[in-house]
Length: 321
Image (tube, rainbow, N blue to C red; front, side, top):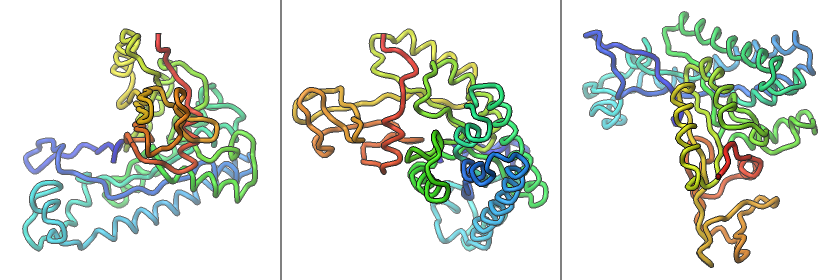
């Protein structure tokens, strides 16, 4: 997975092992659903939160148990030839599912919407930040408890919800109706990220999100959006230095585009959530190349309406000049 972190693991010679390890799966908690279900009652919020955690644990154990008893023969390149391990033919993979050799992830999404609904402000503000950090701390506490009880490598993971963002958003609107700032868009914000439309500079965004990365021990990534930076390389280098000093994992997003009708390289998305060439008006996706980061990966393919709105709402965090 694009942002999954592994826990430390040492082999029989007490040497750290980094390659050939894997993740058993992810179950993602929709934090806005918990918030809206609580109707802004904090006691109710934590009650529902704990109930959903119990449900997530059961779902994660289904994933884990579905792997138990699997023989290495089902995928020799993975289990016998070194991609994941070097087991013997016919050997059961069970020993790789425990003791931190592999991880299993409790994902979460929509921290921004959850915090905004419950506190009235973004987690860029103190009240929202404290509440958001408390949520992640409780998720970590749950993973630590499960890990101690089962010897399975549970950890929390900032879910990218690549296409699921649209599904989550539609489910929220069906269940709770139109709630301004929460369910009035076709996506929910990834993991702990500041919502795409919020005006904030690159350095502030990366610094703030780095505090939430420290609590997302099973996986995290931060992004900033930039225009064409060829005329401002110095600023880009400063951002890279800042990432090095503050973040475990961060990336710089920019869009590469080319219109096959006129050769324009500055295609943008309109309010209709379609890409339009500003030079010739071409809006045929098959007659242009658009490469941009959707979540954890760079895609040239169309995406669902929810992710399209997310992309439309993104603001630049750094100037071109």
